[in-house]
Image (cartoon, rainbow, N blue to C red):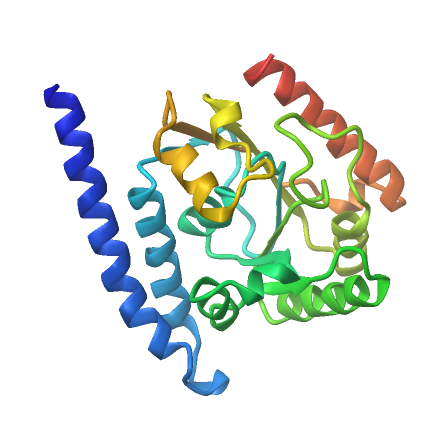
Length: 248
């Protein structure tokens, strides 16, 4: 009983914090783009942490990397849930790649766009090329970018293959890939599925186990590979090993 009351109070505190942050972030998102910069991205990272708190998730970053992160990198992760849209930017200073539909979400879309999120229509080759150019521009400007090579939320388990985009960009720019393996202990509660946004948020808040484990591994140097196919297959093989280690 005491634990249940404590959790309800914790969630109420989280939602209060999130609402207040949103009331600050939303009007600021209307400022000219040239006025937005590091300070807004820092607010966005704090806003993302407020989402983690409001959803009641016990998010833990496990440093499996032996070496420090490179100064400039492309972060990739598996994509079993929509929660990582808040989880990844709460932990890493990155510009995320998201599906174009997110841009239309009330409040969330505008704030994410102002913070530097890149949007793509996955079914459109023209949109994918435009997104790739935007990613390269961000990387050349010194920003780090996060994306999901599975190409969307396809299921709670790892997909049979990755898309080549991240690996092609890594080869073209010479910027290493930093892999993060995501593991939710109540996997099916966190899986986005076909529920509405509100329904999925409710499932996460009512999860039987609220632990989310994000495993950070060493950066992978693109100079070790001659083409995007072998690069992609190597990294996908690592994710299969991590799935067997942490999930199976």
